Length: 616
Image 1 (cartoon, one colour):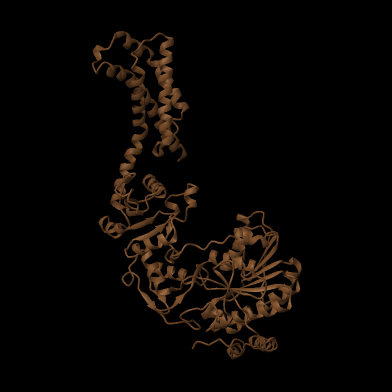
Image 2 (tube, one colour):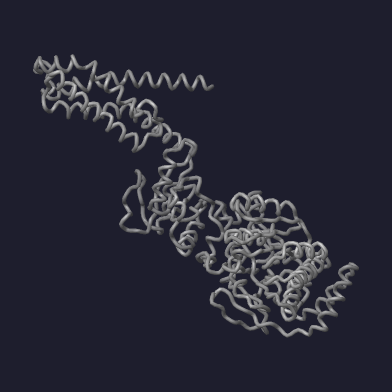
């Protein structure tokens, strides 16, 4: 195969050399003919003799200069501005050297001859080099018109220009760009690489029908989420599949092309810009500290590890019971942070001796406790496991932290701990009570951070909806009125880290999750964004609330009140008074019941968490 390719290249080069010889001769002679108004017999004999006698030297000069400028080595199927410049410069140098040679050998020609010669030589050389790309483009355009995907681009900026160029120049895509949408009146009616800007967003639906659009590309990487949200709201009423560019940094790095387009995420429908936290100023307390993360392989724990690793801790210790997750985050951090001093340990937070040994050996300064059983329906079926892992795993980890001098202990809690209707939420509320009590008796600063659902986390509804859509439906929603607070994983973790910096001990930090979102709306929007019609292509099925699930989540118990912090998205709940003696007696009883696998564990939990109301 290699020999076949080399033979083909050789034939192409031979063809180009022969063509250039003919082009040089033709350009030289035609330059004289043009000078004498296209009448060959009117040309003076001395001029003809000068040109013809010097032609062999002119041809040799041209071939050497062309070879020097790699006009026989370039891939002309992908010729661009650099190749155009090389042709112009090579032809110019050829004519200059030709003129100097003719002067040395006293060959006279008309004064206009060099100018016409160089113009003709450039034109002929352009034809040979760019004609293949031209006819290839026509062929590909014809093929795309027959079997391609019709595309609309929203945004008439540099990103759109680069994407259009990438699609037109690629033989691997079967897309045809039909029109461009932009709200800027100065751009409407104009063209980008032959594609018309047909109007503003009010023309989207009309243009989808007029041009039979299959996919819409949102090429506005620098605009806010509010703008994207407004456009997506219009586009979701069409049957088109939507894609968008990840962000402005793609433009800065020159990486914008079709491969950078991604399907529109549900985050784009939340209608707000990403939460930004000044981590460089906040994470000073992490730098040069030994940080331990339990549950470090999970969705929240792994993002904690990523953001902590970026701020140069003296050592990062990742503890997880599930070795596959631990291995994945270990390999990722090794690649992204080769200088990081990292220790990955397989351990259960329920193992007292193992946790004590880890704290004794590594003596962490800061602990983020993310290890927990979090799946609500599963914990309803296995309540004793929820208590053993969440409550007593937290107890044992916090006890080890206190005994071995950890400076700060941050518990990752949940909004389900507020007026809990399920075992998972109640177990997390008990965890909050544990760390508040520990904070009163030890030098370690114990705090909790409470937030709602995170998009894309393990167990999130979004991955489930996507799998159901890919399978052709139905998409299952538990209740038409169920709502949840949503935040992306990086946003939540950034606020967790910032809350940790604010911690002075005993606080329950509450993250502002924004406005609640109806799960039914998320399901409908995701179906539409995937290019399907709700109820026709993909139907939605209501399955009823699952065990322990409630229609809405609360972030704060009524009796806690709120205190503000420097960050308006982080609030502090006032600690609730706890009868410690009674609490420890109840905790002892809870431990015995959970270990004996008794079935009446909910009764004891209700005594410990009066706001717990079991959902029947």
